[in-house]
Amino acid sequence: MNKPSTILSTSSIPGRLRSLDALRGFDMFWIVCGEGIFHGLAAVIQQNHGLVQDKTNWQIAGNDNLSFIEKILIGISNQLHHTVWNGFTFYDLIFPLFIFIAGVSMPFSFGKQLQQATDKTAARRKIIFSVFKRSVILILLGMVVNGALQLKGYENTRFASVLGRIAISCFFGAMIFLYCRPKAQLAWCIGLLLGYWAMMTLVPVPGFGPGDLTPEGNLAAWVDRNFLPGKLHRKVYDPEGLLSNIPAIASALLGIFTGQFLKLAPANWNSSRKAVTIFGAGIVCILTGYAWGWAFPINKNMWTSTYVLFAGGWSMTLFALFFYIIDVRDLKSWSTPLVWIGMNSILIYMAAHGLVNFESSSDFVFGGLIRLFPAAWYNALLWTGVALIQLAGLYWLYKKKIFLKL
Image (cartoon, rainbow, N blue to C red; front, side, top):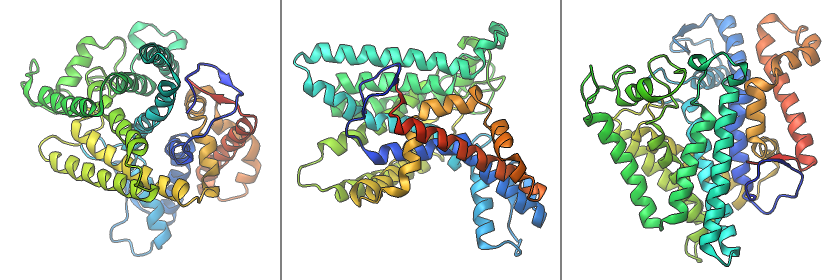
């Protein structure tokens, strides 16, 4: 990863983990176009078979008319919704996976700068300043995505955001990485997870008491209602609120641990052994998060400690698979479109979340062809057109070596 910058760069990209870019692109694909494609395909199947929808999920149990492929497509569509409160779906993985990926990159990007520096203290200060500047820009961009420039007034402006959480968690994760040795970093991670659990279960909330983990009664929601400026995303709480930034730092640290392991593993460990070890560590985190979840529910909205471990474990296993397939086995060509997305992830996120109306663009370009098909196929084909337009633009930026780096 390059030295942080806040401009569109046309410089060349130095050596980097292709699997990390591909995984970032895979992660981003689902929220910029993938979910629209699969929800559209599920709607076609629903219409053909008269499936019943329970909350956000299509019910397929007992429907013997569905083919194996149709069941898979319905299953994918069902996983592309956030859980209402407690629980976990694939869609709940997308956000912490992005933070995890950012963490993995830190030992490579910051480590290289520190190795080349003669004055380590000055180099650390320079890195921290760059990360701080990047964090401020991400927080401001997050507010733009939330519509801050519409100037609807303080009470209608949402200050918390997805980009803001990425900024805060990665900034403090970078601080811990730069100023603490690995054992101290681990102690920080454990302390953040246990400390957040203790606060959420032991601190009494006015009007609710201690240990109330409902949307209205949990401590993080109370802090949001009383101290988070502006508008709350969910009226009584904000999923990217103040207190839940604490465990999100641990999400970044899990990525940092993974990146450090790749760099610092014994010299006699080959890449395959590293991949297997990371995969195994991921399984341990998944099982630990699941077991602890019986006492402290896995919950994205509160970003519970169990959610950090469970999502972090899945992030590790996914990264291990991508690393093994792409970087170890050198099977790269299939991942090229994902790399286009991954190397301009913030740009395509901003574009897809308010700056560009890709749906209208797709209808303008492909609408005539789309309307040749039955009406039930409209959304699936429209979002396929969105994907093609996005990939075409990202490919052009990639070939021109233009990357939005923060």
